Image 1 (spheres, rainbow, N blue to C red):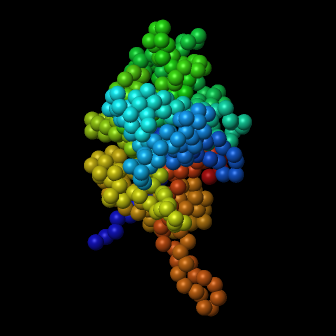
Image 2 (image 1 turned 60 degrees about the horizontal axis):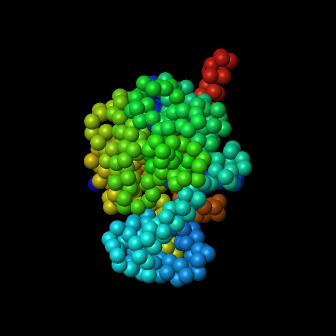
Image 3 (image 1 turned 90 degrees about the vertical axis):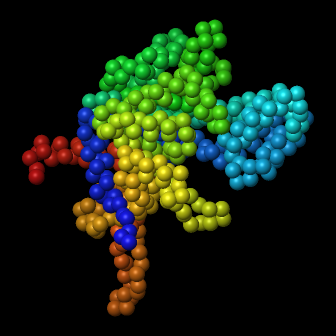
Length: 432
């Protein structure tokens, strides 16, 4: 049986043609992974990943000043670890706490009553909110990958405004856009107390050429004005509107402003000649996946290109493993719809076919720099060359597709701008 492979150099031509086509509607869905992106050799401010955040929340809970609460909270955490085992993280922790709060009634559990669980849940959410406020730590905006992404937006020549959808609560994309003086719209209108304007979110004719930033899980700085019941954006200390990581995410997503923002995602994908790139998003949110897949089933021309971080290390191992395979939860999604392509580090699902990345021909010297923007070739040692007493290297064409790394993806985007400028300069000088 012939092994299925995908040539990254051929596929990247398709991505390139999409991005340079000014008439295409281009959108991005950015998940938590993009808030963890760092620039090489530079101190980038990042948001903690889920397991790091779990550890931070746990440590902060046990730092509580009230000595009477410490042993109770420790007992609750130990109980959760025992029950959840390797599934223990901030999402499962918060889910179980909220479930216990719902069913406890007038009873006690792990030393806490109903109000005790409510206080613990509020504490967990307050810690999460604090850890999302990393904007206070930024000294140099140019050290942020999101700023480099915004640079590409500012240089890209497009007929329609770029649409950015993100599940992240932080201000990193806002900071990047504003650092490059890029006007953007996020669904809020007004000046004194900007309010969420659902009608404008639903209207694609509203500011059609302006960049859009849609925070589909809410944001730091979003609050409910108790006097008017409006969703406003300000710097008050009121509770921010987030969809916190728990099993209740789907229920929360059915409320405003989230329902309007998810409708925007669905309707964006239903437009002709639309391409949505995802990065840092693991497709673990069913309420978002349903919107994406339903839209792809309706429109004939839209496409989703998922840059999927599938690299991980097993406990105690130094070797890298890759999760994009036939057992992956994404395999069923991508093989059921040809308009969803999933690009992992070592393999991809393209046209419903799972195959590993492999160049069909060895790049020429002139081609190598371009290939390095998106593919890191393996160096395979075959045998010892007895005549020269050196190791002979056999080229295999295999390697690592690096664009699921948000930092590398942004570098790739900006490399296209450089190439475009060089091409224009060459044409002006009459050089062929």
